[in-house]
Length: 444
Image 1 (spheres, rainbow, N blue to C red):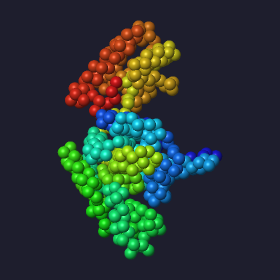
Image 2 (cartoon, one colour; image 1 turned 90 degrees about the horizontal axis):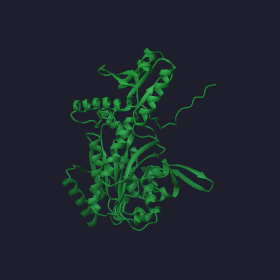
Image 3 (cartoon, helix red, strand yellow; image 1 turned 30 degrees about the vertical axis):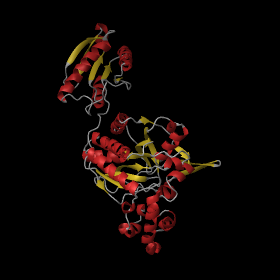
Image 4 (spheres, rainbow, N blue to C red; image 1 turned 135 degrees about the vertical axis):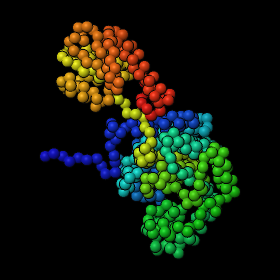
């Protein structure tokens, strides 16, 4: 009886024909982060559950409803629901915060949340994220935001709006919490059960509730920006000034609070209206108390996360360019066992120099082999048979133009092929106004 095995709900497969899209986003994100001085960090897929309870917050939707947690003997482990907590834990545990500050790291990783799957919201999703630890300066906020903006610009994503807010410090929030309690208390019985608990423990979380009823009740709630202390207000004004100086347009959105408890002062989101309700493609902010909360010294920090699936949804919607998928450089069509042996040898030589070379593995006839070469999108083909082997020469055919060049099958074969190959690439440069690598093909 055949087994009907499918991937888990809320997950996706990335097929070879689509992976070049992911490579485009990852390549540009890595290169841009490194140009800002960020180095790559890799952390485990799961962490001790207490890490997320202490950092993300026990009253958040993530902790209360969405985490995947397992018990291994007497220890609870959780698949990471976000990247910041694990990155900060790694920086602490490995002594990075004892080195020159600020420390700057980036990562590309998968995250896991038990949510209702929909477009742009999966149970396993992928993030590009950065963390900067050490600087309390508002210029650091502008630096991190400008990095995110630079990545979006290099991906050619349009119609994305930067929304910023300040959610203050613990001093600001103490007064703000009292104002929220006073506002929501008369509506207590109308709130969802989760928000009734939040009203006591962390009233700011009411503003992040997904319940339509709670959202309606909270639409006229007091705004944190009206309760900022002098320090937080000055910090926020400086962030706005630096962004303006950098030519980055923004909208102050006093309703942004972010869904995780560790945020302080600046929070921001890059939002698009082109992919429906899940329009936030990048979000982040400052979390000056998180490192201390996890057992370290007081070290201010900030960062952001970009959802790769959402970025790709927007790019597909807008028809953005991607790096071209890698195609076959040369295909050897063979007739007979000796020709096959020669093709194997030549292919091995070319692969040593990084070329994508193939030959027939299916026992096809010559016509079928050439049809397969076309499906591969082979740039060049070469037919090998008894005559070619006897003369130690064969015709190299450039598939797009049909031009053929007779070349020797000797120890200079690879050098001769490279000369012809790069002449073709120079023609591509001319055709593409001097740009060989910017989304027109793979670099050699």
